[in-house]
Picture 1: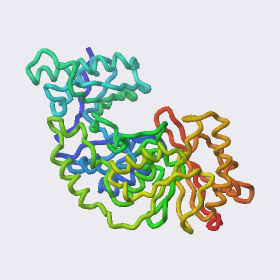
Picture 2: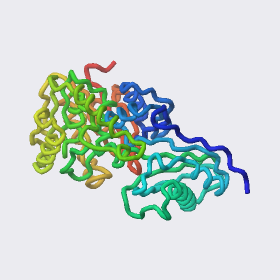
Picture 3: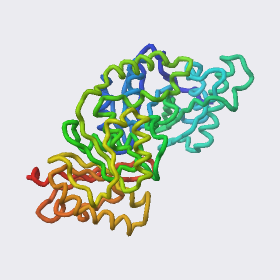
Picture 4: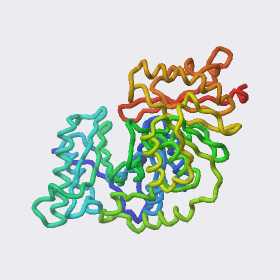
Length: 398
């Protein structure tokens, strides 16, 4: 049997540990900027992932304050895994008792292998699970761990025969803020909506309008940002309940975040929809988020909407395309945006759509002579690909 290579694993959470924030592909730079604003320097970026390091207090700030990330992971261990013996020993060397209590259930929910000798994902999960449970049973003096209990989720990635084991510290995804009790069909995920707002270039000093607001996700995320309301205030995190968790640090981070909110700001945020049921959901969700009195919701068809200020930002996710409706309905809707674009010619426009070639639908901003007026950003969130189409106001084009 090959002697296993020396494994490295994270130190106590009283020290600095390696972490990573996962996100939709295309917004890594936005998440890195968020970390820096929280006082946490990003240590590297890859597709859908931003690395950083922090102690317990810093990790709590990230969990409570990140708007655009989906999850935060702790690097629990890293080791060579050229065969199943090395994989077993590497998993067993990880101090699982720091994060998995005697009444908890450890689940390796995802395994991935890239250019490595070990490639059978089910076998990787099974061997890792067995090794971790052997250690935990020995630590707690039990014959077996619970089959049904609070779940601690982990992931393993083996690339070029080096395994990295990560621990999910969130429980539910960070996009689950806790306010969306009444969703409409195919709503934009909260973390993606927050990223779209950052990418649009919107600033608090300008009005923001969503003419297809649905259940209100974009206006609500705009209000949370505008008034410096941390997105994680209304929820908990699985890390808090772990043996070496940070319940006290999370409570402190939330207290600091509440004190930092700036509810005295004057910011104009509005959302409209032609469906009264969607508006009712938006009002209820905004109330749950604590911003119900700070967003103007009204019923209107987008084709009838008119600017309510000289300048501003339109940021919206039209409800057609691959997610809802037929391709023909999507094309008809996008075609109607040309007239909308002209009415809002002095506003910045930002549409989340299902196609890369979009400018031709949106009027004079994309005709010959306006080259570069529309800028596109590809966003990949799981199996779904969307395009963020942005256009500056007509009188600001070079």
